Image (cartoon, rainbow over all chains, first blue to last red; front, top):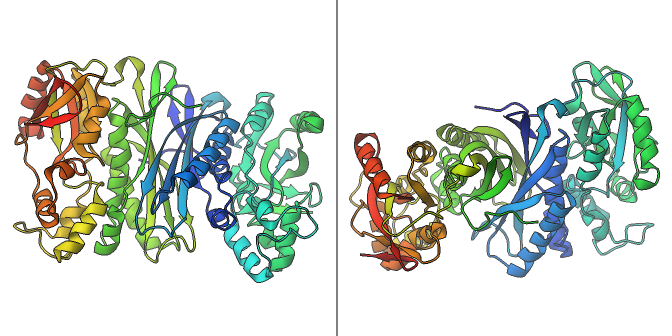
Length: 302
Length: 302
């Protein structure tokens, strides 16, 4: 018995006049950088972000979150730092931390290491669900800025780091932060902002830009026969991506299907809504007109 | 923002006239035995069981389940075996497999190893929630049989195995199954049976017997001032526990606060309901009158 909605960003379960929307994710090998930098206070924000940003793409308001924390031998101080981040993430997304499991698994994890997974459930009225099916040619792609790499692409990041000869304590070239700080910047939680934008109407589809970048994630919300045209220089690419690309000598196409490149959430909206959102954005928050819907398929750049 | 219900077996989130009830768990170091025996087809049943058996203790009907599967390098054949068990577990508990995450985490897990966590969400009307608060002296403890060790206590099991000089391919002494087969027997999913019993009335509290055994799990459902008196010889202790105790020279008290000892679910019911449940049980399923509610606290044995 499989429910509808698999293949979207969250799974949808019908309940009366609503859908429950559920998502689960971990933070991948970003954890290795937490181990190396000793920055454990914000990885919980990343964990919550990965799941709640998925479920808000359906227009669902997150209700609650649960975490699973697995390690070989429990280090209470370390676990408290991680849980603190999870609590922060739940506050940022206005959802309850309903429970969790701390699993001690001897011989599973290296000393001082752990794995995390998270699970979020939200709710949306059936007649308000956002599913992309009304997207048409000429709709506008609005991008919301990321804080950096967020929680995807860290296997590639670690390879580039190893090749570069730099350490996480070195400065990000040209910037005042270290590479460790830039790479560990917590994932933006878009929940409140996106729900606010949705409430004003005209939002037809939303893509959470995770592993696979624009290339894999934007088409997931499009009806057959439609594609995305992205305006290449329409937003600010954060310095950390420029460093990754140069240090790793990575092609544009690989960058774009691995990283968010500075845009963590893409809203597909009517032209009227775009006008309003981009107007509202002045001052209150940053949003970019990054492209438009065209006939065809996939993602192209101009 | 913490929700009520933490400390019970599942977390409760109010939604209209109902509670959503959510639980998360893994299968602990039972996974190591899966790696050693090569039995990967039923570990997914254990995974689903751990979460759905938790949420059914509130009287909640499981709606859906999500899994998180983490490994260093994805082995598709192996993952398919694991997922097959998860699908089986969802069918046994009549809930939807709503989604999941397969995480490739290089350098996190040894070759051929993986970790699993699962999340289940159920629903129960507020006026039907089972929370133990009406339990009184003289109520009856009804036990439902386990299939063996289920998914807890495997760190101790592995120590005993190592001391015993036996391998997982040896026969369980006096039985026709191997130690590996006996220890890997999938956790019983009690959902349908427990919901059926609940529907007939008189069920006041339910304890899922996991890590901590009777000692830690039964008191979780009791109001202050009440304890459990267990009739020691009122059910059949499976042979695998006798072997563990003898091979490991383990005290009764340690056995009882580590293992389920043959009873995976304890229902606290009125005397009338006990009469009916134990009558129904003849033929259709097995249930034992294993004890009663007394004034005091904790769990005692006679």
